[in-house]
Image 1 (cartoon, helix red, strand yellow):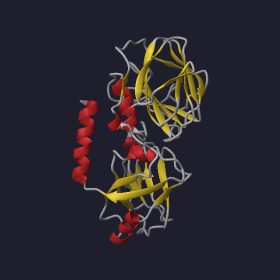
Image 2 (cartoon, rainbow, N blue to C red; image 1 turned 60 degrees about the horizontal axis):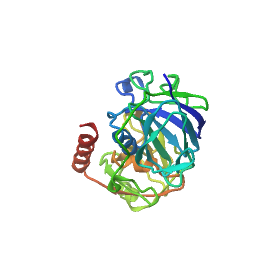
Image 3 (cartoon, rainbow, N blue to C red; image 1 turned 180 degrees about the vertical axis):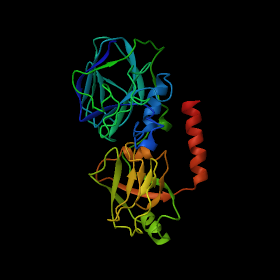
Image 4 (tube, one colour; image 1 turned 30 degrees about the vertical axis):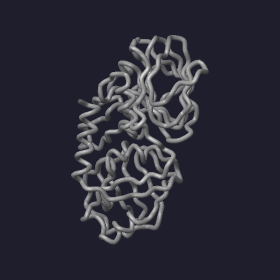
Length: 304
């Protein structure tokens, strides 16, 4: 099947879908998009179902040529978008005709953009998902966890849509400001004074952060002794012996023995994923009931 032919793949471009679930008991992480807010909007603009395979483009410098007439949607980091040299808006959908070239320049703010096509990329699944997990060698175009390379072809069907559309301004994320992220604190993980110290100070995002975990730098916390290993989820905040917290992301391990400070609000994980290294970060506590209500609203809107 024809589709998009990759001319420049950028620093790291990965195929993702909703994630690889049902295998964590065997140590397989779910993966999936780091910014589910932007990914969900990209698919919704095209009328695709939740979790339809799309492309996560880190930092930009991506270029592809269409082999079919289709429609694209791009949401997320502020990467200048051009079709045959003509500008196209971000957080929007637009037509791409056979023979036209799409170019995403380097990001001006944010870290990752999501490129979806009408009908989705048609790919073979590995353990029920196309989500790319480089460390575990799963998913992606060849099923071996490889990032995209120049010359790769992303199969997709021809498509027609009635016209252009954009995400309402109120839902377009602004990645330029210093974020204050919401945390559900765990009363049993660290002493109360250490939890308060976490909230009171400003942290810096480490250069060692990746799709597995966002590492924070600041005045070290004093964690208790190592605990029994337990299952962990996306957004879990672990405190290793050096006292510098780690927020677990999409490619996380499935179990951990470091003390848990709490859990980042799932709808704030996308904002953290768009932060560059050295970004200053603040945190504030949030109640579990509020998180549950907001998640229900999010999933009702995007999943129906």
